[in-house]
Amino acid sequence: MFFATGAVSLYLAGKYKSLNGWAECKNQVGVVTFAQMEKTSNQLEAYKESGDKEYRFVEQYFASTSGYSERALKLAKEKEIICYILKNGNFEKVSYWS
Image 1 (spheres, rainbow, N blue to C red):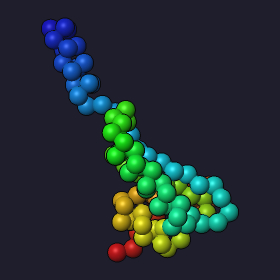
Image 2 (cartoon, one colour):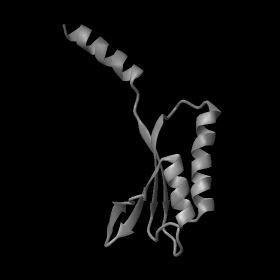
Image 3 (cartoon, rainbow, N blue to C red):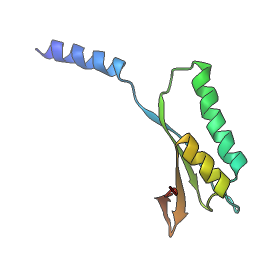
């Protein structure tokens, strides 16, 4: 019984590998610009297109200590990048407009 359970566990572990999130963090004086948001989005796309299967990224995150430009947030919304901003010592998820 133990052997069968162990074999099934090993099979499932190999089939369902870890899921990862791609994260970019900025600790800068100015807000995150469109160019910075676009660069991190393009880096993830290039990784996916490279065929490298070491990591499977299921979410993309961007954290900023100083905020985002409106264009950067629009791009983040389009690309489904989850953004966080530092407020009162804690990171809070950015609420996008409708």
